[in-house]
Length: 100
Image (tube, rainbow, N blue to C red; front, side, top):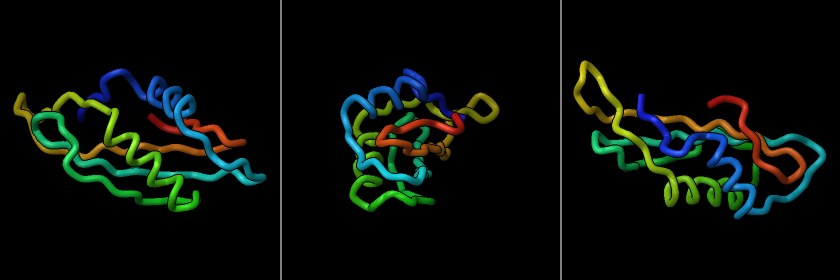
């Protein structure tokens, strides 16, 4: 499995500093699937589950693509293409994580 350079919590903190979200009564969720090549570069991304509005969800996904760096995934000591999932929930206008 690839490693997110800088860590998941640091990413969440940076997203909350740079992006603003609408506040609502209900907690919203967002799951993103990122494809990472054998060099640790993102080559595909998509939103798999979302209760945010589309614009806010795409804003988070674009932020991930622009700022995240990964170490290559390994299988039997060989670098391989793989997937990485981001699990977020948005509560009171702030992004939080429920799994890293």
